[in-house]
Image: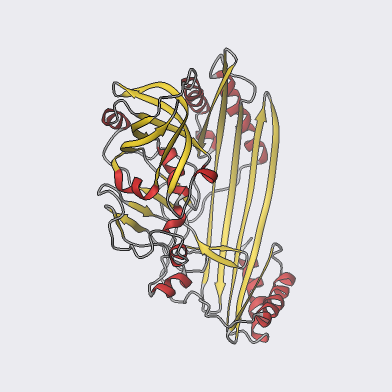
Length: 448
């Protein structure tokens, strides 16, 4: 949507809101366009192009607040939203304190968005190029192997009666390869995503990496049960941290569903553990200068050398705690929640090889599944089916599968013995979790 178009829509909202007797109002718009393509065997198996957008209006009349939203961003729809929101406010039985971001705040100025959506043909060609590279990467390539490509461009506007006139625009594109190898009737697979302009993507290198990872999984056995030194691959640590992300939300703490309630300022992790939430993560094209309530975003250290410095707040949860918002409000329909931007463990000083030496005789975990059923975000307990490799002579050894790693998230934070020095490339985007490899001296494993 053009800025001029949104300003006309907001002007109509403002006029109608005044007529309705509103003392405060805000209009939030989020829209995105997307293209994606994927292959099967030697053909395109799917292509999609989408354009989505929604407006969310919130207004205050007297001591009551009403909300309304629509997927149609037009002048006529904007006027309907005001009438609907006013009606919803009148229907509210309770008078509740509501919070609107104040005007006159300072926001980080982001560089202009230079991303331009590629053509449909460029997306299709990129997917077919990834497919070509995948089939050329190994003599063992099997059906199920595929390539894909995607692109998206999003924009957000937030205007309010308190003088806020905010907008963000960002986009990204990339491609992926999914390699399926078959050997003696056994199949193994691996996935590789590469972000960036299609012409800069090395499809052959990406496909080779995926196929090599898939090949390394052949001959996997089930390990004996026991306690092992564990190195979690960064992508697996990302899954663990992402699963337990809600424990860092102030709302969960205030509802009694986070064991971090009342822990700000206390030590909750190992001395080497620092966790940051950064809306301006270096190299990420999907950045945001304001949150879902129009509050400024900023980089914050959530855990500093093991000490919990802050939970993540929106305006309401901050007011309840007597604090200021951390700029982490999310917006969905009429509800306001909490989100992260780029939430990551700060890399340490150890290469993967150095972590392997520390974990001699242990396990390198490279796959985990079933977090939806095997993790309790309230207690922190988890028991997850995993796969990976033995660590032998300081190197990745034989493949292993069908074992379960069990533990407690809060204990894990305290027992991190060493942290890898690199966060591998992961998809760009707002609301991401990123992690380097992490070493723990001992964890229980259930196997054969």
